[in-house]
Amino acid sequence: MLFDNPLFENWYTDSMTIYRNVDVTHGNVDKKERKLMAERIPCRIYSKQKGGLKMRQTAAASESVDKLACDLNVDIRAGDELHVIRGGMLGMHGEPERYLADRPYPYYDPVGGVLSGLEHQEVLLVADEIVD
Image (cartoon, rainbow, N blue to C red; front, side, top):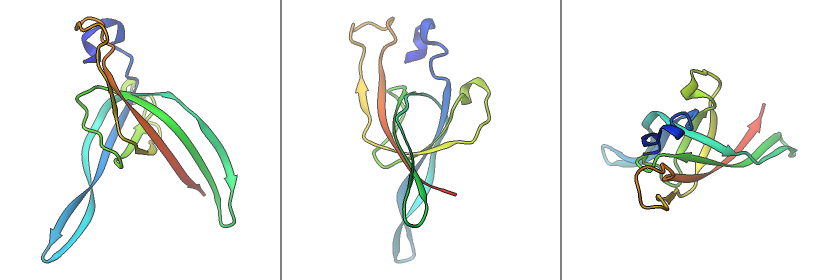
C-alpha cells in the first residue's frame, strides 16, 4: 500500500525473511518446527535502540529493542523470527540481523484517501544475542 504513493516508493530500504514455529505431527508425536513463511519482504527499521554489550558470567550479550515498518498485508505474528538485511531492497547483501517480533500494530490512512500512502504496520523487534 505504501508503494501506491510515488513519494514513498523507496521508503522500504530493508528486506526481511519471516520464520514461524508451526505445529507438526510425525506419527503420534506432536512438536513444533520452524517454517519459512516469506522471503524478501520490503520493510524498514527506523528506530534503533541498542543497549550495547553487557558482560555476564558465561558470555557477553547484546540486547536491543528496535521498530520495523512494513506493509499492512504482511503476515507477521508475535513470536515470529525475522531476519532483516539492512539495505536489502537496495541490493545490499549484508549479514541478516535476527529479531523476534512482538504483536504488530496497524496504522491506517489517517486521511481516509488512497493518495497519502501513510498506512503501514509497526512491529516492535527484540534482539537478545550471545556474542562470540
